[in-house]
Length: 325
Image 1 (spheres, one colour):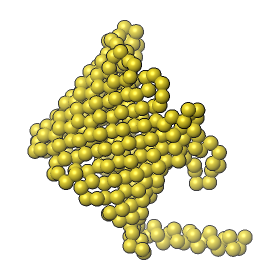
Image 2 (cartoon, rainbow, N blue to C red):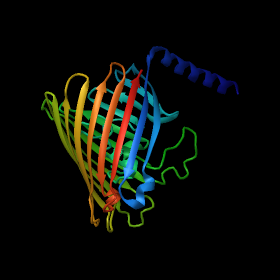
Image 3 (cartoon, rainbow, N blue to C red):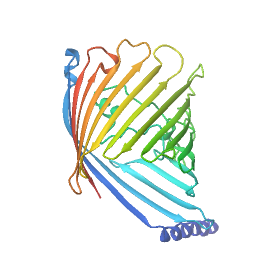
Image 4 (cartoon, rainbow, N blue to C red):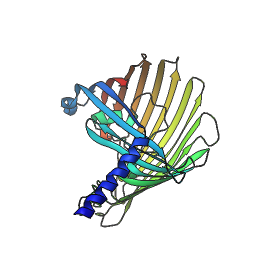
């Protein structure tokens, strides 16, 4: 008992000593939203709605130079009271290893120059099918990132896409979702104003009898010149063998920065599922205002053939305020 007490005290002392020299930064934001949707198809009228909502985010981050010359950075973000992302990164500016969740370059992100939410998020308000699929980025994972100057290469592995183990919890069933591997190349490729994203994610499902792998691919580029930015992106989600298993998402965007405080964006998206007679199509406009400490975003989307169902169309309008601290 005495030895255990001494050991515990020593560990606590080391942890405390580390925290003394690691400066912690606190940041966050409060988002207030209003969303409204209306459906044109008579059978879906009941699904039209409008509502007020909010989201709170608080982030803590810190970094420390280690004795071996490497740098350790770590932190987490809570969203509405629950942990949204977390990370521990050890390395240099050229190469680093991260253990975390929802952190770093990923095909979950977009290079399209959105002012507010992307097409997948906005169309999802009415059950749209424009989706990235399941990736290693959103699961507890380990990744290795090499910064090559013109671009950065990230290789990521998640043992399970169905949640992770706690620090002292049982391992039974923790890998039931199957493993996931992601590789991403992101950078300007040596061209000023260019942003390129190329990546693939592969999911191996434990419950898939045929051992078919789910594959997600994404390619995109945006070029910023002066007050304008133009982008195009393609995503392919293949969930294995059989009918209606491959979906191709195309998106296009143009933004114009009228001045330092006002930006306008126009976007078009199309989702094509193999075997479906109708494509899901969306058109969206966004306006962003910087009111000096308060951000205001206004957007409107027209979406046709929701879920590839012909004639199921909708209009979505949203307003968001963002206060950062």
